[in-house]
Image 1 (tube, each protein chain N blue to C red):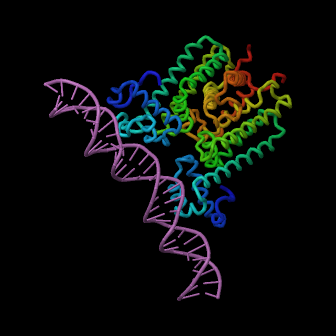
Image 2 (cartoon, helix red, strand yellow):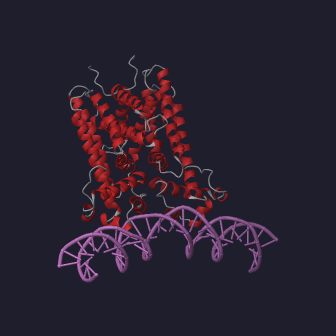
Image 3 (cartoon, each protein chain N blue to C red):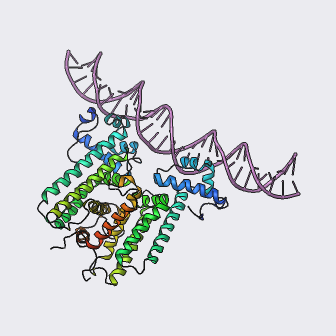
Length: 221
Length: 221
DNA sequence: CCGGTCAATGACCGCATGGTCATTCTAGCC
DNA sequence: GGCTAGAATGACCATGCGGTCATTGACCGG
């Protein structure tokens, strides 16, 4: 998970970066594959190669550990989105959408497990905390898109009568679906999106961006 | 869950319909709220008001019970979709989409728990069986929409160059998102879809159908 | 009223969980 | 080498799980 991250007890933060990394890696992997409730501290400790007592000295509870992992994932996702937003500032909306999707696939390639933790939580709601945080995280995703749309509307690129927030929600959910299906086998309906190569991805990106831009109604009538 | 359903051991099928119903109700409720893995037979038995031994005499294992519940849910969903397809045979595509969504909300009002079991499985993948069945269920959903689209294309209502299967997948995921958010608080981003009244739903339906039909690009250019 | 049948029951089993803590090990200093 | 501070350890705990089965109890024909 790249450079380390301030979390856990003082004891944990004083560990060698390699060991911190090893523990983090094991934790992310455990939560990514089983979600919060079904993740097992026993199993985690086994793959990390440390003793059970240690993990509870590093992070007092399972929940604390999860919070730290999630915070890291959220931080990285936000940072990624900000970067893409900055880099595509001047682009017309369709290209912006395309870049957003494409960079999303790249992000997953680089951080597959962190993405899994993030989306698993967002979709299943399997969390140690109440729904307020979930609602907040989801809203931020929708709002990111709403902002892009609003800007494009004000530039005259998009119809001025669209319902910005609802459409932001819808497009966000579309993008989420695509990204999830890219790394989750059972979400792909045998259409080649799951772990698809760049040619497959290009087709999906084009189809999606076109749908959003033009809709499907025949131009004839 | 309306009339009873052939499932479980002979002993269970010979029970009085009321008792069958009571057990089924408790099971659906348990699986709907906790998914498969986190559902507890102990808790289920408590809410059903029967003893633990009995439930294992009625259905040999937790998995058998889940299979029966899921089969019922899938059957009802399919039956519902067939009905809507039949009733909207002659309608233009946009109206068809609208009716499909509207009747989806109605279905949830009538069968909230069954819907929850069905969608929870489809989204979380938390199942006692492998991913093949999940892929199959998802594919059937996509194909239902692909068929509607194909028919509309052949009638000249839709652009003839659209990628029928990919667009079917995308629209299906859009509809799934809306329906899930209608009964799942944390999926609604504070936009009033969750348990929304009919005015809210109308707005969502209109926005969604318009997006799919016309896209968002300005007509000006 | 009896004896037989069979459904209902809940104590019990082996296992896994999140979490604790007394003990052991190790590294640094004199 | 001996001492000590503090990190690592895994046996242990209470709890809950899916599943079993000897016992109980309700009903029924004679």
